[in-house]
Length: 588
Image (cartoon, rainbow, N blue to C red):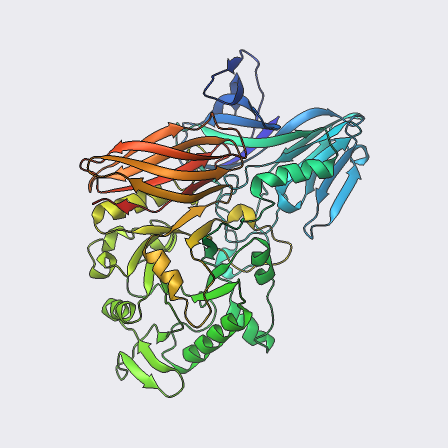
């Protein structure tokens, strides 16, 4: 039992589609290399989509994955889905249990609901459970792959239950029909949905977890798969997230007190974040002011970041400047730097200010590049090849500033989302990273989130990814050059959180090399891979990891032929679409 809503962008017609599973045949997959069992039912039909319904269980886990695997040949289709299971007994499982948006436990008698009425739960952690005297089960979506790109992390209610008769009910997951929440003018109506290119098998998943215990214990067991929606500490690394337009400076200046703590700070601390890299002056403040307003705002920006940083939590003042270089980009200095995006005819490139010291005025790409070099800044293309960076970095691939070591590379975010792909950001993000490394010198990909204001009832984890940066400690605010050095050296990996890569290296000399990687994970794995480029083409070696049980760790050693190869990188992807990847290493 699932429903699917689709939008055909050619005629803007909206369809609400339903499918009925036809039990025409059943295929069991029992493979010693696959730690689990797949049961497929072909004959799936839902409007313009057709395919099969598949259930997967995993050895060593109480997980059940239900998914519609369907395709359409219609062009320009975007869609959302909801799914679940029905026929559960209200006598055997009479109670629904969840945590509300304030993390308070909530429960209700399912039989009291109106028959046929879907009850939407704005449940913290995207999770609800049903329980009875002899056990319980939980329902939840894939932690990250389920969430198409959005500007906000508003909890729109992703789980539901429905009383179907006097003694039966259904439980499932869903997407909302529209966005809600904090609303800058350009966010209104932003609701990206999934892409369904013609002929692609879209995998629309729902997870269930079975437990012999009560709903609270069941919930804790499910939360273990996301480390309780927390990025766990890892020796030798600090966690860093980037690209947030929280209007920090404006909010504090409007409050009249730079000590005012906005809600996003404790929320990020609760996620286990050590370094929060924010981008003010993106629709707020006066980024195009040539002097007085801009410099005062920068002064308050730096002071606010300093005051709210702590021993193990650093707020980095970044900016998505988008001036002169092409597309959208972040410029990351290793310390506070005063500069303007404009340079009037009477202004020099750099002037000595009595209060701020050196103040730079940039009026061209050449000025920005000189600023990057003088202040050891790093720049990377945000959301490459889409949004305000459509056509970039391709259009500037031969620019001196992009070819320099000051241009770090690009950014990772699962945008757009295509559920037929095995990797998040498969085409756009990794395509950009691999192309840039084939173009020339080492370039890296920073995990970004790209969202706006946050409030305590928001649910952040599903929309986040994180950078584990090789640092022994969190630097102080006055000089965070250690962060820039680690990023420039490629000493970090990006993850959704469920997969960690504490160590990786390229071993050996000459043409016979090994990629060696220590990996930790929660969800059952899907595959690991080594990806390389020769300056023109990209190749890969995929190694199945479906023989690995959940909550495991292993050292993978993957030999590869290095002849003619310019660079190599490593990534891991699990069965729920979560993943982690290292930065490319250029071979000698």
